[in-house]
Image: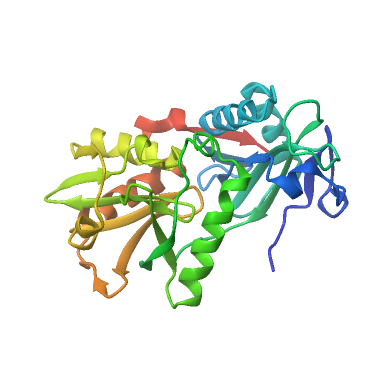
Length: 303
């Protein structure tokens, strides 16, 4: 059972989570005409009475861009202020996750984006580790990631997550923790809700945006940290066979953080993961506001 935060935001007001309800005829429910974001927050371990949010500005900008794809003008500055108010009203006492959502809130049976009401909601829930920190097992999904020519993949469009749901369930029901999807060109793309990295000969490699990936904010953070740490980085296509012979493989995302991959189908991955460990530890230190170099990535909110 999820532990939801007590206050939600819906239809321009804050209200108890259990009272935040929408109509069964809501357009986004039937047609996937919505887009969402996700960000983590933690109580400041050094300063009681403060909540730390990781890369709030980037998350708000990406959601604003996603809203634009739905013909919804929602400035990032407005999203950011409402999220700050949301955190201050809830006063979370443990690690948590925020889910903001923009969507067609109007009622109707015609699939469209024009001439229909839009809305913006937020809810949150307590969240510890989304994936086992010791490592996950993965299978190659039989489902393929969509192409940008059929769905706007530069946004976190809710309709796209039917593929993620199919892949995740397929993986779990066949005895694995997570799925790895290929794109329609037969290249490694991403996991069900995370980006993927491999390490070969001390080189950090990840599929680029042209591979139909989601441009993840944690992915961008990992790339920046790696470059700043003197690790050589390549963004390029990755073949399935290269994945299986990699020195290290890990997944990353807001919920997953940095999660090492210990097995891909019948292939055991090496237990020695120095680059994965370094990046995971650095990212943890940054999110806890313990790294001076990246202080501008963390926003402290008094509660």
